[in-house]
Image (cartoon, rainbow, N blue to C red; front, top):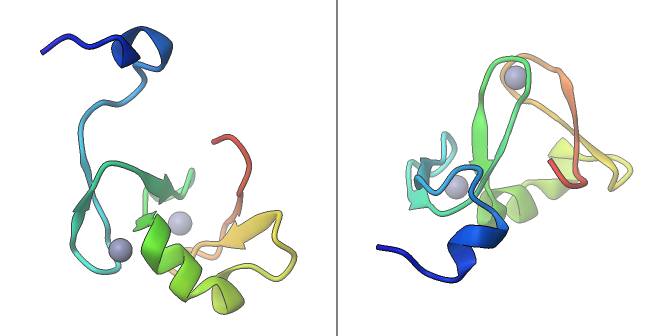
Length: 71
Ligand SMILES: [Zn+2]
Ligand SMILES: [Zn+2]
């Protein structure tokens, strides 16, 4: 399946499984240290507990700080 979108970003076309809700989503935030993945919905739901400044989020698994920017 080739679409126009493939040319722009072909980093990871594979869907990811969110470690939080176990759902398969097209995009997950992933901890760069342990690989913990959390989907956008779960991130927003737990934002108060994961991010204190809106710039980084703390992995609930290993406690590593990850950027919320263009990861
Ligand atoms: Zn989720
Ligand atoms: Zn982690």
